[in-house]
Length: 323
View 1 (cartoon, rainbow, N blue to C red):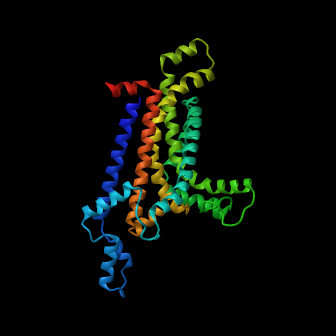
View 2 (view 1 turned 120 degrees about the vertical axis):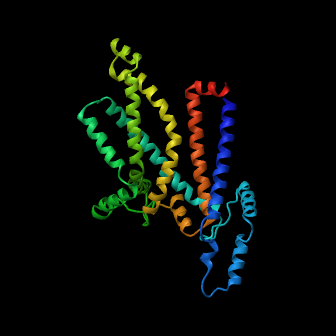
View 3 (view 1 turned 45 degrees about the vertical axis):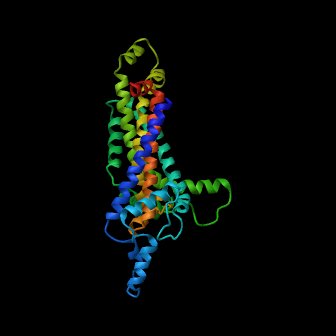
């Protein structure tokens, strides 16, 4: 098992390095120059060239890459061009906010998807199953940014029930419960927008897995011996149906992070997604590269956890690796 984990970690590190290198090359080939944000008609060309030299853009690409890689290996992502502060400080301030949002989305979509999937699996062929699946498919087909704007229009502007932006209210709030409730209200709309596609997919996944389990001989034999439906479902069927759900942990991470970029920007959520969009428009290369590496790390870690958990749950995976 230890050898299996070590191989997965080495593979993960190689993937992160490859993603970072490819992103560095793409940014270098992209049109535009970060020094152009300093160019004004009144600024002399010699001053602009001096700025490019200070930023290191006068060096050949391979020298810029080696310099950047050395700094990256030491935990130095460079200095943001637009924020004028170390990128690592910006990440330290915004990453926890993104993690709060994505972790809540993870928990909500898995909980609701499993519960709804179990319920619909027990209602196979009924009108309830068709109605709920149709409604979930309708929500799934909506673009995330459009759904976010509609929810803001209804629940923030017209009804005034929920805040439309930020992570907490700007006014002073006293007391643990009022502060907690204020933060929960700010989470509801972005979490809803991000969760809906994954709730739909998890629901259908659980339904399909349970249908396969229901068709297995041991399930039919348990029903023949007179076991109660709930005991068969929760003790035997659900255990086998939830095992493949482990693989979705790694698959969901890139999509949640990708959706969080647009969602954070729409809801003015002070996270990594919002600053990434700002960095792209401003050609802030150090911040763009740092955001890309963080996203790649999250995806790789998710897949690594998925592989390890699945190997722990199913020893046959480890056996195949050693053959």
